[in-house]
Image (cartoon, rainbow, N blue to C red):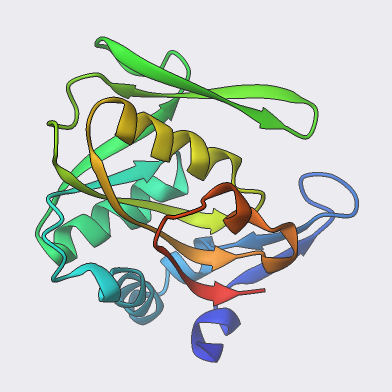
Length: 171
């Protein structure tokens, strides 16, 4: 995993002072690194009978769609409020200062369908928790929640009790 970590740019003080941003665009532009990252995110889920991958806006779209292709599943986007054209379900979650919401089409998942949720980063766990709630609200079965990066000190896993969590890289 050191090879993957070496391909991720670290940007200090972004988006605000004191934050170290892990920029995965440098990994994504590298064909070998991108392929290896997708292999590692998908590895534990290829034989779990997953028929849909749910990707969280926006880098989760990139990783999730590639993982879906790799494991032979369909893809469903979870978007910020007001970005989807059909009837949606919504989950609101807490931010450091205020709240935010995510939406998914109400008909995106069939009852009982086995789902893998993918995003680039697990930090505090709010967006992942909201996405798990959306999937379950419309009857999906969450088989796992997968991330390229986990910021361990932020304890995001604590917001996902009982979920199978897979993180390729940990900082």
